[in-house]
Image 1: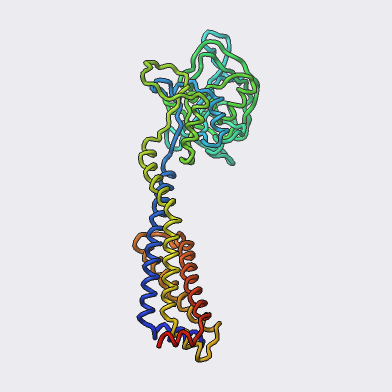
Image 2 (image 1 turned 120 degrees about the vertical axis):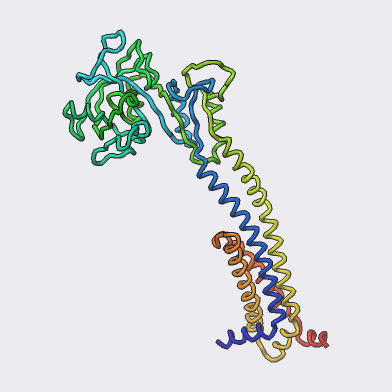
Length: 412
């Protein structure tokens, strides 16, 4: 208690020097907070741009005229997925199946009796009308991203054939040479695959012609992919895009596309060919806004050590000189019997109080004026306070080592 009162009296007694020390601390703290705030602002801006970028790799035909009704190479999709740089967005594919029901129909000029079946990685293509999909207990739209062996049936077909939730549909898969797209049932050669079964996880309504491409069964894309691969046949998605969750990987994704021989669009080709050996990335807006921000942030970050080092050095020198200006007072206290430890603690505590008050005021001002979060300023300000106290501590120690009589004699 006595020490704190003595500290308060000392700060009050040296009002002018106290004010100077506080202003120095506040000015240095404000400059450091403003620079740190600028770095944080550009970092947050870049993060917001990254979160809202919604970058996609969309497969398209070579002339850039078609994004649906394509023949997408599934092996290239797998390679992109395995890289970890991208995530599946919407894939759409079709195949044929036969379950021996009355819905089996002749396929083209062949004697095969089959139906069409669609597969997706999202439920979006099913949502033609509100409440178009009904999931049974334990299932939801997340099933489309899984490899769980489940399917959805048209509600009319589910009721007509007397199915119940959780029943299994047993069928044989087929592919055809003339069926690359879920939008075109095709005709021509047909290739039989394995027999399998899927659990009925829900139903969907067929809303006129808009839903005819869905066929008589819908399943997750991974389920169809596995069934066709196990049949040693090829699956050809008719539509595909992947998302780039981290825009920092944009250049790596482009390099991977080039490695996989997925080419950019060539608009000089007057073709509507369906093979999707081409992909586009919707990155023009992101690059136009994010790159200048990134360059500015990198510049500020490269300057940060220099700025912080300069402020820390100025703080050290300023606190040192302020303590040096009170060398006579230190000598007088020592001559009156004050111990070295007490004198050191008193003067260092004064410097700490003024420095911390200045740092807190500068932090508050930066938060109110620029919205810089205090958490972002905590570490730089702690480093600044440490530098300030280091200078004060060195000055006091040097004063304590100087003879009291020599200091008093020099003052006279």
